[in-house]
Amino acid sequence: MLVSTVKNFSKVIFPHKCIFCNCIVEESDICLKCFHKLKFYTNQSCMQCAEPIEGFISKSHKKCYRCTTHEYYFDKIYTAFYYNELISENIHKFKFFDQISYAKTYIEYLAPNIKDNFDLIIPVPLHYYKLISRRYNQAGILAKHLSEKLGIPVNHNTLIKIRNTTPQRLLDFKSRLTNLEGAFKITNLNIVKDKKILLIDDVVTTASTVNECCKILKENGAKYIAVASVARSIKD
Image (tube, rainbow, N blue to C red; front, top):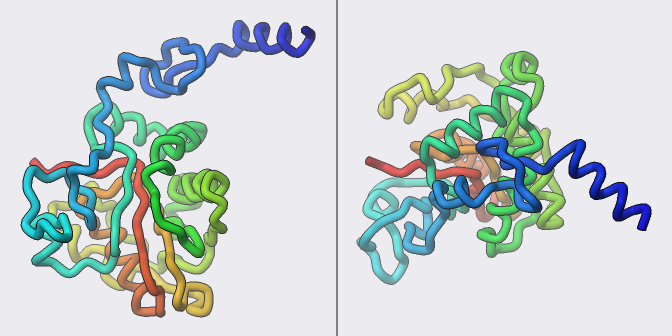
């Protein structure tokens, strides 16, 4: 009786709100109106890069044209949402304006899409200078929640960023492909050697960042690498 009263009182004082529009909701972190505006991951997507496609170039492997003609170091990408204005604005708040509580909701929608087993989770790292100015690594926060959800250990120190690069969002497509070359380093190859690794980041756009991370992980002996992201961009 007392517990129930306290719960009801707390709901009045601290009402549950939608993480997108801030309207009051009963249980879910996303209101029905915002839920219908989101674009969720669909199985009608490339099995490697997770981009939605209408037809498959290779029907037996369900890969898109780009994945059959380009070399990628990741074996698969998992995502929760496809990028649109609503998720873009929300992730921006999560990333730059201390809305770290959003991570738990993101993981609730991302985790069910991850069907494989992994030895460890590694977040895409920030350079030291950027980490100081931002105060937290959004990928690290996502990794923590995903680790708790899936029961997979997370390692924050094995993959590090050694070069402070121009943010990818400020570059054109061609520049993004080379901006991160040599920017990452493995501090302990024994941790990644022969391991199945789940690399996590907030957004995958051109996949240049995660591909560079996967490249250095594969070069240091990682057996299999999948990428997990909150959102995946869609080509125009």
